[in-house]
Image (cartoon, rainbow, N blue to C red):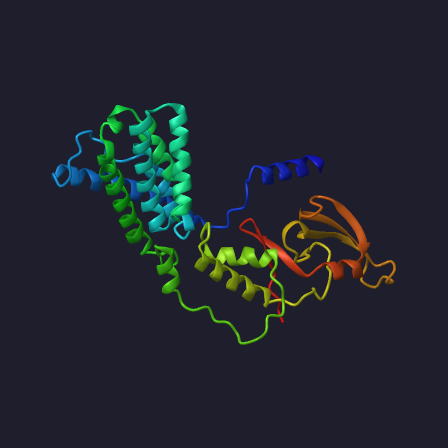
Length: 326
């Protein structure tokens, strides 16, 4: 049991968390990444071959486009994936990298300076895009093939690459209503979420957020609009269930409905006969997740009933409420 607890703590420490997206969503993301990068190479090559833009160096794509493809096709609604973040992140960082190299050369200190300045600029210009840091670094450390291009590097391949991958992202994600890109389009054309004109009676719980994430079916570093949708879905899940289960039954799994470090999932391992006297009516439970992970305990059934807010089950690696029959 201690070993299991150790590995669970290690998993949390290194950030190996649950991913609630479906298999279909993962495959769609992979396909999008393939088409995005293939499109970058093909269309950039076509532009150069047609003589629309000159490219003496033969560079058709920058490596950091691979990282952008991950964001655009695996996290299309993320704040870091939106068009201004992609375009501004690459072009501004590229400009900073070229300027640093032109002024100071390509020492390791200048490489760090270029990336640091790029991060600061992206922050202040509201276009944080992690691959932009790679674009700045590539200019400084990429060798003469890149540095000889000077500021022309910003146009081909950087600007052309950015334009192509954004075009492919808009076109590809448009085929899937829940993935429309940019994120504002997905929010604007989404059917309004119906909210009953009643007062909110229940606080949000860990399970409500899990259920809402599964309905969004997207691995999100979230935008304000996306967060609004997520919170509304979570609120609707919070209103579906009563505050305590009617019975505490051996073999079933329950949650205390808390958030953060206080959240806990317990399974009833054994219980006294239901006709036991109140002071002898006890249950034995095992903690499956959250606070007190993998411990076992014993308490009165009435105490457990007071602790348990609702019954849960595990689906797609997430703990979700068991819907009430009432």
